[in-house]
Length: 194
Ligand code: GTP
Ligand code: MG
Image (cartoon, rainbow, N blue to C red; front, side, top):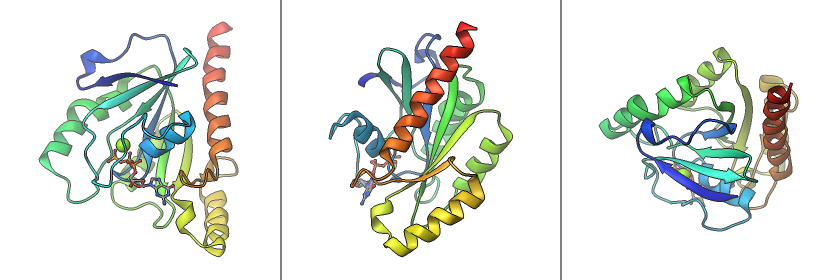
């Protein structure tokens, strides 16, 4: 996986042709950390203790075949004017109109479940005809008991195989996320070949 481009306006989106899989979630939920873990690198995607720093859509090219797309996070604290603007001008149009977008990985903090802007995002994903994987992050911060409870809740809410407990720290769930991404990219290629 290699950094490809930071996109600040829709004009700068890469040429069509490769499937895109995006990572969505609140600021600080662990999107960039998941990318780093997938890439097996510490600092490919910038991570930060200070939420809401990312102002661009960041594209990572994988195996020359598909893009992983790191979206800016939403709604950590009070929604600022800058964030509203960023979502209205860049992120929402990307999500709504980008035909190359073939899958979404929705990250949710395993300690809290869906909160704040997550509700809107989940609603929107359900209405929308795209493959989704729900990744519950920072699972290392849960006790084994809470993890087991969360796992059960997830299977009920999201369906078997559609949700995974993940930790960028320990690598828990990494193989499942990887497999889902490869499967999603492959499906698109198969459909195109037909
Ligand atoms: P924005 O770019 O602001 O939207 O945030 P992000 O979703 O990319 O979050 P990021 O990956 O930068 O992580 C935010 C903070 O959470 C960092 O301090 C990470 O080290 C920490 N973090 C991320 N994933 C994990 C995890 O699985 N376990 C633990 N313990 N900490 C994590
Ligand atoms: Mg980030």
